[in-house]
Length: 338
Image 1 (cartoon, one colour):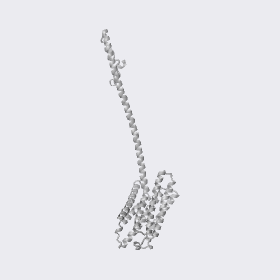
Image 2 (cartoon, one colour):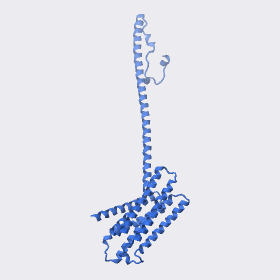
Image 3 (cartoon, helix red, strand yellow):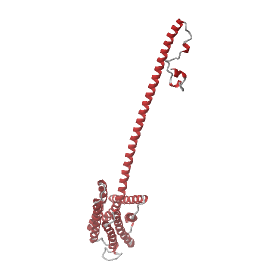
Image 4 (cartoon, helix red, strand yellow):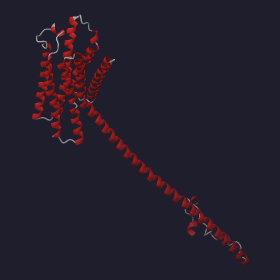
């Protein structure tokens, strides 16, 4: 059961490494930003897949087949070294990419070349780790302790450069403090690779074969994930900031639209209130004028009838009657008279 759990753990580490590298390369290709650091990340992806397959097929290798055992062990140690240093070279070339022209950038290029030489030297060392350049002995000889010393020393030197050189560079730049802390924290994740390397070398000193294999796979997968963190985390951070900016802009626009609609509603309600008030006023005036006109007519008729002047009222205009707005499209002589 413990072996199954360990196998599942290693599969999870390798799956994360493969997926993170695929996402990194897809984003860089979509953004048209592919560079040499992506080439080393791609090589790490190419080699970590067979490295994963080698671990899964370890129990299928018959111990009686010497040639197959030699191939499996040699492929295992070589692919492990290539994956580890491809990931480190990807980070080293990323540092070269973000540096401006100058002495520091030339120094970073030289360090990247030294990393490539270290990788080549360690691969050659894998062939002679049994004391002589003999493939027959690779099937059964144990990993010597001086191999652990050499690997640990190169790993520590490389990780120190990959962590502290970008930290020093970013400290001298004029980035905002939160951006600077984010990028330094991403590069500081290289300490995870250093810790995995120390554990791996401890198992080599203790000569524990199974633990050496497990720690080697975890170290290689961790290195690949760490080399992709700078690209993926900065992309996610920019996407998050862009989303926040769009959200704030939409909220501001919504508030402005709401304010405009409120002003329009208030102005419409005010105009309706004024128009209704105007209609009521004209109606009241017309009614009052009509009633007054009727009273005056009644008084005049009674007085004229008594005086014997009937028919004169037909020539008197209705002075007190105020017509409504709809009843006077044009001005007439009556209005002139009034």
